[in-house]
Length: 463
Ligand code: PHE
Picture (cartoon, rainbow, N blue to C red):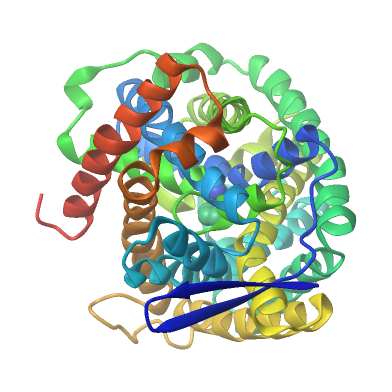
C-alpha cells in the first residue's frame, strides 16, 4: 500500500491507494459491464414502457438515445474511473485535483454511491418477486389460470410482508456473497457463468415466440414506427430509459472502468456493451409482445405486464411450465448481475476510503441496503397508505434515483469529462483517431448535456 498526496491551496487531500484489482481481460470487463447494464430495466421495464408509448417509434428514439447520448457518456464515465483507478468518491477527489477544479465536484462521487445504495434497496425487492415467480412457475401455480386468478396470485403475494422479506433477504444475501468474493473471484466468475446462461435462455424463448400466432403482430408493434404515437413526453421517457438501462450516472460504470487495464479501448468496449444491452432489450420485446398479442393481452398494461399477464400465457401455452420457469430464472440472473454493480461503488469506497476488509464492507453495506428495502416491502402492504409528496416509499425511491439522481449524475459526468478535465487527459485515456475524438467531444460537450437537461426538465415537470 502506498500513499498519494495532493496539495490544494490550504488543504491537503490524502488518498490511500490500495492495491486496486483488475479485470483479467477485456472480455471479462465487457461481460461484467454488460451484466450490469442488462437487468430488470431491459426485461421488465423496457417492454412495458414500449407498450405504453405505442411501440416502434418509441423504440427508434430509444435506440437513437443510446447511440447519441448513452455511448458518449458511458465512455466519459469509464475514462474517469480508469484514469483514477479508484472508487467513485476518490475518483472525483483525484480528478478534481488534477484538473484544478472546484471542490464541489467531489459530491458527484457521493451522489453516485448514494444512488446505487437507494436503487438496490428496491431493485432487490423486485428481483425477489422474480425469484418467487420461479417457484410459482415450478409448482404450476399458473396452470390453466385465467387473468383474474393470475392477478389474485400477484396481489396475494405482494400483500404478504413475510414472503417479500424472505425473497428480498435471499436476493440480498446472494448479491453480497458474490460481491464479497472480490473482483476476479466474485464479479468476474459469476458473470462468466451468468451472461452465457442468460443469452441461451433468451434465444430459447425467442425460438418459442416464433412459434406463436401473434409473432408477426408482435414484431410489427415493436419495429414498425407509427410517428403519430410519439409525444414529446415519450421522447423524453425513451431518453431516461437509455440512462437507467446502461447503468449510467451513478458510478457503476466508473468503478467497473477503474478495474479496466490501460490497454483496453474504452470506445470499442462502450459500443459493444451498449449494443449488447440494446439487443437484450429488443429480444425481450420480441419474446414478450408476440405472447401478449397471441393471448389478446394489452401491451400497455404497465409495470405489472410481466408479473400479471405473462403467467397467463405461461399457464395456457404448450410447454408453458418450462418456459415460465426459464423466463423468471433469466430475470433473476439479469437482476443479479446488475445488483452487484449497484453496490460495488459503495463497497469499493468502504474498502479504499475507510479501510474495511471487503467482507466487512459487504456485510455493512448489505445490511443497510437490506434494512432500507423494508420501506419498499411495506409500501406494497402495511404502509400502502403512507405517502410522502403523494408517493409511496417505493415510488419515492424510484423517482428520486431514476428520475433525478441518474440524469443529474450523467449530466455532471458529461460536463466534467467534456469541459472540466484537461483535454489532453481525456485524449490520453480514449486514445482515439482525431475525427472520432472530435465526434465524441461534440456529443459529450453539447448533445448529451443538453439532452439530459431536457430529461431533467421533464421529470421535474417543467417541460
Ligand atoms: N441497468 C440496470 C437495469 O437495466 C439497472 C442499473 C442501474 C444497474 C444503475 C446498475 C446501475 O436493470
